[in-house]
Image 1 (cartoon, rainbow, N blue to C red):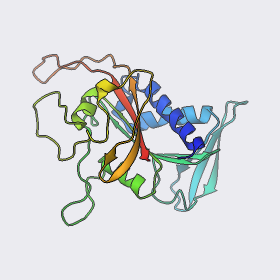
Image 2: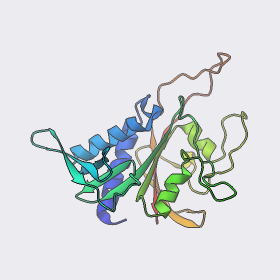
Image 3: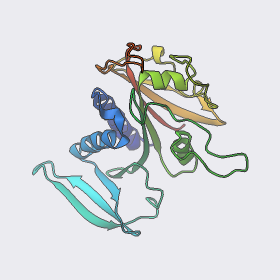
Image 4: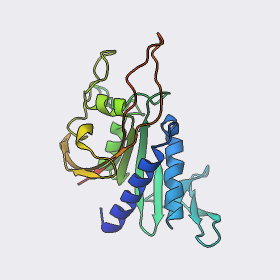
Length: 235
């Protein structure tokens, strides 16, 4: 990444960390995306969004003077292509980011990191975080962003909060730093080697949400702890 891309990366990660203080934001990736896009637009960046048309996108900006959103149709560039990363910053620098959220409850309460190819090499499991890493490897994205609950994050590193279920086939402890090594309001940079690639990982702690979790039997579960925001790119 160049200096301009690193600057917008920090803006995205900080906005995700601020948004993560909302107790409902990790229910759907779209909620986190909107929070990030608002910050980008308010900071003077323009963004590219898809349209139903195969050869056109929307370019979106916000006028700092009039505080109005401006949108216009634009030809879909080859670089934006048909892969359509979740967030596409158009100017003053270009950055393509994939986004994942894994929360304390709801349909995203498990950090999907399952394998993305079967034994015959056919793709599968399209909701897996490993597809975001694949997009980086293939040059279809510049950045992967993950915001996760403490339980999802720790479990993805094989530090499970309960004995329910069986361990996943992919463990991310070689990629993601341990949560207890992170500090609030202070980004931590690591450069792990994972699956034969060296990565740059920037991690931020966000405050724990105010949520009471109960089991099916009505027992109070271990309470939510600090959420984690992670940005990953090829070093």
